[in-house]
Length: 112
Length: 114
Image 1 (cartoon, one colour):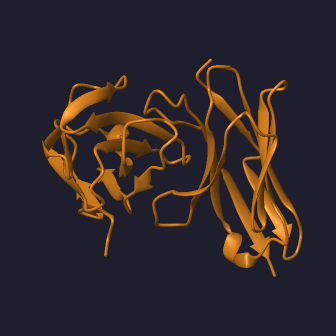
Image 2 (image 1 turned 180 degrees about the horizontal axis):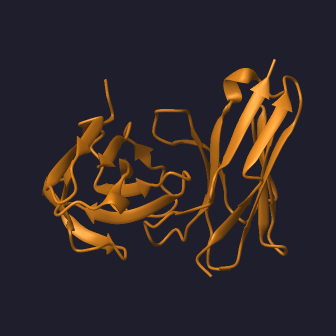
C-alpha cells in the first residue's frame, strides 16, 4: 500500500512533442505528490508538486494532472526539448511525516 | 555555493571493508536523509534525522550506521561491505521533517564493492 507505480520505464520523444509519465498510488492518506528530475551524475531535484485539492498544476511547460478518484497523477511536458532528457520520479508522501515514497523512475530521451 | 555536499564522489573498495560517506548541508535545514539508488535507479529512503535525532530507520542492515554530529552533518558508516551494497548513495535535507517540504539532494556517492 506504500508503493507508487510509475510508467513507462523509458520514453523517447521528438523535440517539440509532448512527454507523458503516469503514476498510481494506493494509500489514500498520501496528500502530497511531487515530481523530481534527475540528470545523469546528479542528485534528484524538485520539479513541480501538487496536493489533492486541485486537479491540475502548471509551471511553464510542465503540468501535473491529478485524478483523486482514480488515485492517479501524471506529468506532462509540453514542447519537449533535448535539455529535458533526464530521469523523472514521481513521489508521494503524507505531509505529517518526512517519508517520500518514490516511483520507479522514467528515463526520458528527447531527440532533436 | 554547494547546498548539499557529499564526499567522496566515488568509492571503490573490497568486500568486508568498512567505509564512511560524509554529508554536509549549508541550507540551515533541520532534517537530513540518506537514500540508496540501486542499478535500476530505484530510490529508497534509508534514514532520516531531525536536529541530530533519528526519525526514520527503514529496514536497513545494522551494518549501516548513520551519525549526526550536528544538524548540518549526517555521515553514513558501513561495516563489512557486501557486493549488494554497491549503489549510489544520496544525502538530502529539508527545512523541516514534513513530507510536503522540498528535499534538496546532494550529488551522490557511487559505491562499488568488489
